[in-house]
Length: 317
Image 1 (cartoon, rainbow, N blue to C red):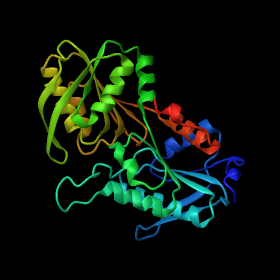
Image 2 (tube, rainbow, N blue to C red):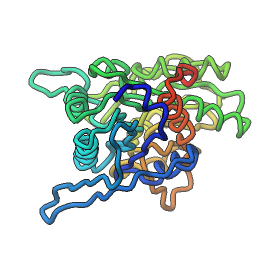
Image 3 (cartoon, rainbow, N blue to C red):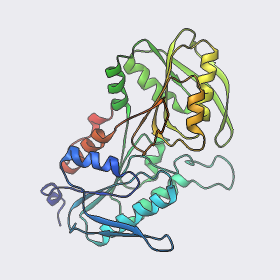
Image 4 (cartoon, rainbow, N blue to C red):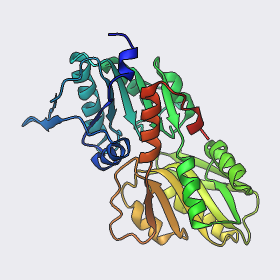
């Protein structure tokens, strides 16, 4: 079936079980009902996915972040895409708001796996023709795919939140050297100063601050990062800049993984607010500091433009 026929039909929006609330929001914005599916498990835990509508020749978008439980959600995504491919879907796009296993993106030591590449291979082999994601842990992961990848930024959503809160006069803090480019782009758009943390990580989920490049004394500070996992680094950076005279501290992290005792660390830290997006479902419980903003509008616009064959470069601001 020629590619032009995709534009003539309503796209099919399929969701896995990883983040149904986000899929519902995207569906409502696009005014496209979610495709009927049945996703369950056999008695031994194996995943069973069944597409309950005709998708032959359709432009299909599978919304499934590979957050915890990561292995189950990755397998679910692969199985759904395989089902679509075998049902003769015209085109399959994996919409992965959060791309898991991204932290192992190179050989940092001998005899280790590059899981970011492995997952890319699996997604392509399962039948994906394109990937839409948000704030990859490392931009070079796009090159691990032999299919197009749209790596959107949560930056417009965050900037809209900051504008709505009328938060002015802040200094932007990069929590490590790897986040400098991201922090610099925020600083430019906020017309703010930039401070860089020289952080070392002796082992996974552990970090130490060695130097603070720039002054935070008597400054309100924004800390920007792509993800917060155990919150050890975030709490440590906040404590370090507070000790150097920082006043109000607000942190923005796109992906709120928030493992182990992350909430306790945030509550005990000098951070006044931690803003995360809904790329990952987050139960904030009794937390007084963690707040959630939605990327549904951003993803819906990307899906709409991609389906119509329009440029999405305007979303990369």
